[in-house]
Image 1 (cartoon, protein in one colour):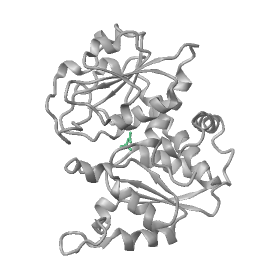
Image 2: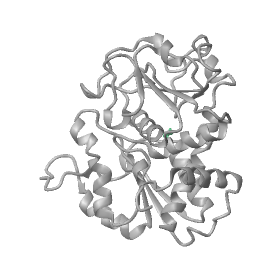
Image 3: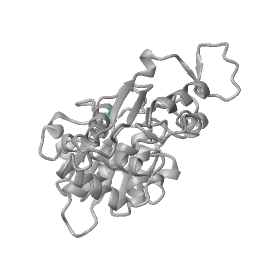
Length: 316
Ligand code: CP
């Protein structure tokens, strides 16, 4: 593996999941793989789980990591080629990234979308500029359109929890929120579940909240949440803003919040969320505090997903 930006960078998904679960059983079994190597982790946006789990994963592989909060501590970066930098940006990625390539062996980047310019966000300009100019492997710690470490974790968690022979019914449901959020987690979950092909996959959301078809193709899309939840084995809860009329929040209908009453329609579904979650807006206390919720197990698995990916990069 050279870079990790999407499921397209994975050559054998089942094997990657098995690698992650093997690390969960034996975290230090490859603890010299990253000896004398250092991972730089650049955050243009906040993070708790991704930051800490990736640092732990690097540590388990014997690799140092250094975190740099670009958004708070660094110079404002310019990403457009041939920009006339007479505005607020101070340093071009063309100058900064090669230096990072000299300091580090692997580079992790978190860079959220603007939600203002769909073409720019969906071109993944920022992370692609780091790949172009750093000269070292780049791992997405969540980019403008995708969150691959989260999605790998999600598949690992479903593999771990689900023991039936038949395909699970997996439902991704839109949830209310107080502000417009990126489509990254929903895009990425859709991309990975579709690629995996091991589920009967349904996406439910209010009309006008369609995700990009490049990620949802293969899933069944319904606008009636009750119909979607019928017989579900897993319900993945997530808010996202509009894609077509980009970055808007049209409705915030509280009836879309998953409740214990709605869980009765499911096959006693396990409930997932990438976290952080707005309690009693996206998901009710009664669900989050019930045995249906596997959000803590899911977040715990972030370490093993990151470790599996970093090990592939180090071997590559
Ligand atoms: N799920 C997730 O990416 O969490 P953080 O934003 O805390 O990293």
